[in-house]
Length: 321
Image 1 (cartoon, rainbow, N blue to C red):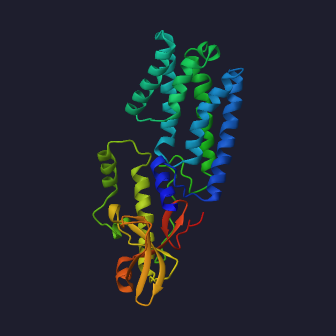
Image 2: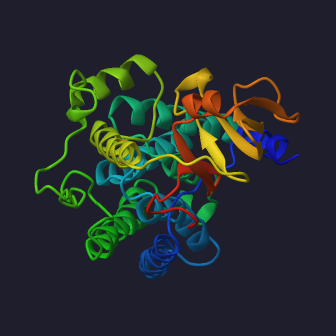
Image 3: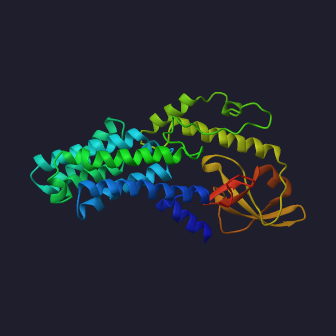
């Protein structure tokens, strides 16, 4: 049943959150301060319910800036450019396209198209474009002033708050390129490199791979390089740790793609091991299987646990968070 629930969760896209409780708290606090500032600015230029809708648009940006500060969609240009371009397109559609339903749809569609080409794709920009058409008389009366007051002021305040708040914590890079991840020195004193694991892979190869996928992915080549480096460190730690097979624990074959599998050792009976598949490609995840201890040891590469919906090696720094 647990495996079925996990499979359903992956199909419907339940996020596999690996962040610590501190990171979750900081994200919430950052969003609080950012939106409080935006709300004050909105109240200066709009009255009534319209202020709430402006803040709602900025609220979506706050989630990205403070919860995903390293993400490509969260960086200053996507936030500022995405909102301003979308707001301008929204106002244009409202003023020049007669049918409000068509104008609203055109505003969002054109905003997405423009953001893509101007390299500032930012999902909340769609809401900003839509609100320029459907925001009511308070917003319509502003005309192109809507782009500056309150959209520009709101976004400048939000981005500024994001830069100042995230700079207080060295692992929260914002802007991503300016504040690079703090690298912990290796025990040998030499800076580790992912080239030690795969010497043929360069950072440019990650960029090429992103191009070949032909779909926008909210990650940068720098982030991929960092992930590869951290994964390489984990692999080196795992290689130095002797593997002991014990009943009740989970083991992975450390393969990739369709060959990957996780097994739980149910019992050790002399030279035989009883196990079942907990995840991955092995025949059935419900029934028990038997193999020799030698065969299981040859198959198993690391001991793993479930942490935040992901299988991670035992001893990982974030396990159980």
